[in-house]
Amino acid sequence: MAKKLELVIITGMSGAGKTVAIQSFEDMGYYCIDNMPPSLVPTFIQLTQNAQKFDKLALVMDLRSQTFFDEIYESLAYVDDKTAFETKILFLDATDEELVSRYKESRRSHPLAKNGLTIDGIERERKFLERIKLRSSSIINTTDKTPRELRQKLMETFGDRDKEPFRVELVSFGFKNGMPIDADMVMDVRFLPNPYYDKNLRPLRGTDEAVYDFVMGQTETEEFYTRFMDLVEYTLPGYRREGKSSLTIAIGCTGGHHRSVALTERASKQIEALGYNVNITHRDINYTKESKVNS
Image (cartoon, rainbow, N blue to C red; front, top):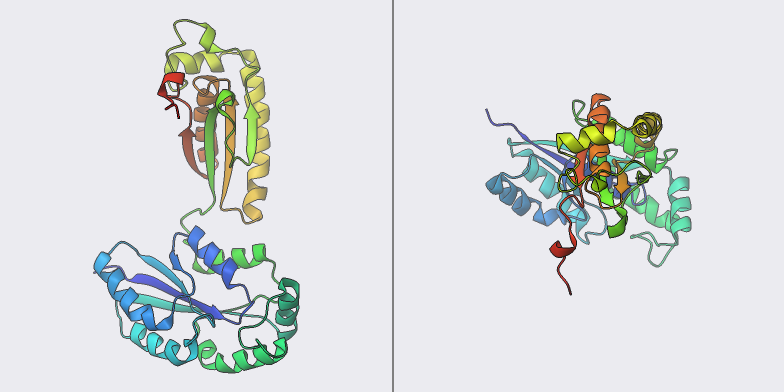
């Protein structure tokens, strides 16, 4: 029997946190579309079924769709008839007082109060959404939640419990080619003995056993590596608690061929052993002056 496609419709009060929600669903591996006009839902579902490329979908539908209230219930009825989908409706809510406060902070006007008071628009919207709120499978009140807390709640409710959403990106690089601009943590290992000055090791890379053994065989390397991994092991749980979807750790030597590559390889195995998902990028491992195209 074919596995049902997961479809989450994200709706609720304007200002209640739908932007944070769609970002969280993207991090959980959902194919997401923001501001989906309800009238396009049937067509989108047909295309999705034909393509068979997605197994988890999340659609945000709210008042930015001008005909939202007229079309949303027709679209939900269409989805209900599709047995190939496991459909859930997430309704995000907050108190009127909190929504007014958020609109004042953002200096934006409520979609239903372009020419009136914000509270009047909120009250109208709440009345319009009563029916869909009653149909919702999950209702989350974000009044007292920070974006991080909302993200955590969504992860707990909709995330794959067997899959760790947080991942560690390990990047080796050469300082002479510039630092990675997206690194959260950078380690400079140019103080370690350099295999480059051994003519037998120079043409090899840090993934080669001879270079790896040379780098790891240095007294300085072992002391540095122990202290470095103590730092990594201490900080990773904190980054995950703060709601980051990934952490990029960059390790750099002069050219990005030897020392940084070897240490990145070793660190990846230890971090994986701690239960984290790890991706490795050896940015400059094959970089030479000749390989760069002159402009």
